[in-house]
Length: 191
Picture 1: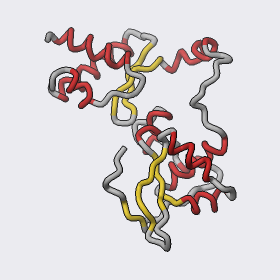
Picture 2 (picture 1 turned 180 degrees about the horizontal axis):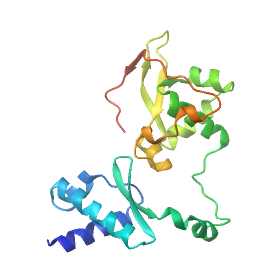
Picture 3 (picture 1 turned 90 degrees about the vertical axis):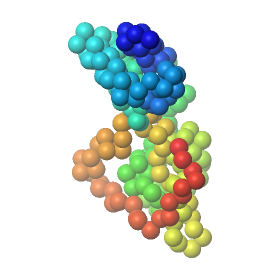
């Protein structure tokens, strides 16, 4: 396959995928083409889109690559989708709980409830169901409660490359402390 064809195929894959594509996924589709060559081709595409001021951009999100609309055109897209309902929107309690987990992970349901001052059973179930959080281990405490952390789906939902891209905690009026280290990690559950 010629370099132009490879570039066109990768472009089509990125355009068609509703989730970020990992280099390994692209490699399998392209009969185990070298991962470095795939990464270089994606970088070429990224530069092509930026230099020609196209409406699309390619970003690295959650360890993969995704084609999305250029942020400078967001005002036009808002007009296009004005009034459209998004079934994937999260409630305020879900967003608050998710923020606590994202910044303090890993932590137990009891720790979340002590911070939020409300029962979070339903919210935890919703976040698990939407694959935004997962059980990452058990606390070394009586009853060995489950502790929760964010998933790759969380990164995808918020368009983040990694947790390091979260806004710095110093920018918030009330600082959140780091999660406790007395947790046993589960090795069988990956996401």
